[in-house]
Length: 270
Image 1 (cartoon, rainbow, N blue to C red):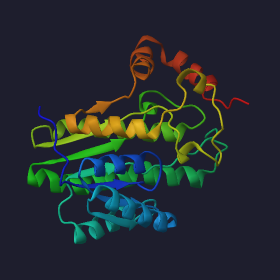
Image 2 (cartoon, helix red, strand yellow; image 1 turned 60 degrees about the vertical axis):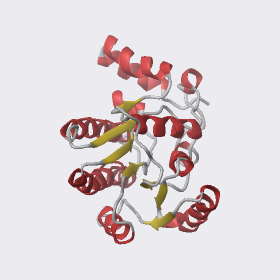
Image 3 (cartoon, rainbow, N blue to C red; image 1 turned 90 degrees about the horizontal axis):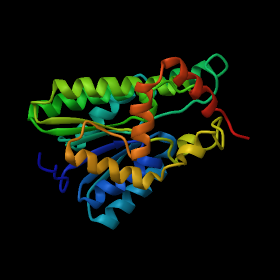
Image 4 (tube, one colour; image 1 turned 90 degrees about the vertical axis):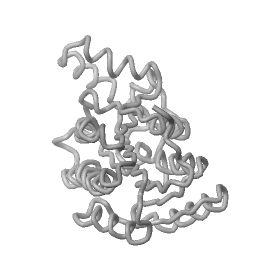
């Protein structure tokens, strides 16, 4: 399969104001793609400044949209606002996501429900809306930012891991459905990455797991994600160690052992 050409394409990235989202935006702009950036309304000014920076640095067209994807109408509003200004979206990047750390029965249920709205409902809705346009044209790419958490339960942030398992299953199934349409669906599955998602709030400064995996650089993860998208890969796990730990070992171990290990290595390390 030939590499997907990004120059001149229109790429929509959610959660684009920081973390992996902003680094993905830089990568796409470097490739010559026009970037449509979306983030939460609280980051509207930051997003506008970032949009201008990309436009001036890489000589591409950029747009910024502030939308709360946790709101029921948020994904539909974003879709229609984007389509009104940029009729054809070639690449849809579902990067926006939330994290809640803490045992399920003790963490704030309203925050966990909000996580589900963003990580699952908004992603699914945007994927559905833009995928219909792409299959009608017979061309396009969807990049869903998943996680290695999709491949086994994540104790102490159970809803986050469950949301990524949903994203993974949905992406692979839909990817097979549209395989002959000219559209590709790809997931990027990094391990813990040094982004605001795990900084501040209730997420521990250190996990025991970090002594095994460390923390990824979001710029490196973004570069790998764009390369995987261009190649049309359905699943991309950055790093050989992560492939072994999250794909091979769960298949060789019982679920009980995997869950027990997860309980200890995902605890806060004081």
